[in-house]
Image (cartoon, rainbow, N blue to C red; front, side):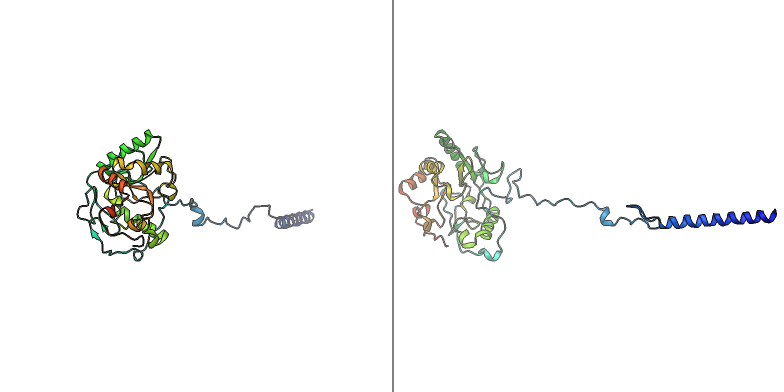
Length: 297
């Protein structure tokens, strides 16, 4: 009996071993199901890049805007002529031999390509005229010298009574702003062309606080050649002298003034002189006997 029990026990052990062997082979041959990883392979640790949030799309810097209070901060102009970019110093003359005007605060001061304002000049009586403007609120470009501003208010009111709605585009410009603006134009069109429609810093009438660019209330053709012949341009040409303004750069006088025809650019000189110039058809250069200014100068 004892021998048979040992034999039986041995047989059971053999069967158990065979069963375990077959089970192990079956487990080793079983394929991994989709997406599963072997238990002996650790998950890949996240890289530093995967931990970081993906950057959002970078937005371009907003254009320079008008500060809340007047300041000599260059800003995007509303005129079509304003261009992005700046010119290199070599492209802009640095030492122009120009006459410096003796009385920059005079209402009849002659400023042109041959006569410039003192480097640090800034009018002391700048105010905001109460008229519509395309320029942002509180922008310096809304300002004029007080006498010119009051005359502008009267002129706009008269135009409104005649069914003509006007808007200011650009009035006073600081010397620094004119530098920036002129450099942009040079970068866009080159020095020679830029000087036919834009003034070298110090020679711009806008720096006197007595000049203003004007358009229709809708802003169409503001400071563009298409402004010529519009009802607004025709009204200004016919009536502005009643309020002391002149079209400073008239048609046919380009070789005298040095600038293209600008029916939008008005200059305050006082009622008496404005009416005299309108009657005679003279420019300021001709009236004061100044040497004609070539548009190439």
